[in-house]
Image 1 (spheres, rainbow, N blue to C red):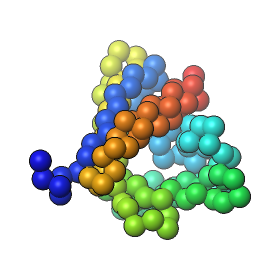
Image 2: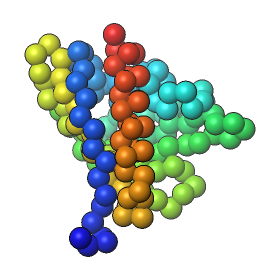
Image 3: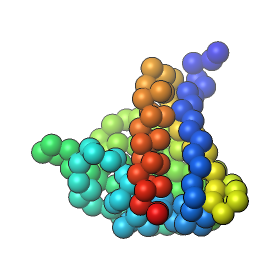
Image 4: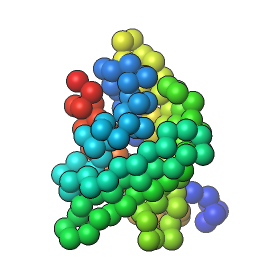
Length: 143
């Protein structure tokens, strides 16, 4: 396997909520506040420019500092597909997160793929577990 290929952490999650509701939970500040980084700290700032090419910032208090997650929307096809760059501000690493949402019954199934630099391969399972925890919190917030 080439070292230039990204490592993928992937999670599939079933929601009782419709695709539009789940998609909007990713791009609506007051919804993001309810599911992002559960248990890690209070959200201090959320800014979302919800459009293709738009940027977002999710800032969370962790101890005495704000950890800022930033990105740019690379694909924006409501309610089926969303892809964005993902970076903790101040670090050189930039990864890509893509979300596919398929309507299913009265709800939907979401598949999240986080492409990481190969140097983070050992964190793949931890990354998938973190996203699953956030999706659990999102499902709870959408009830």
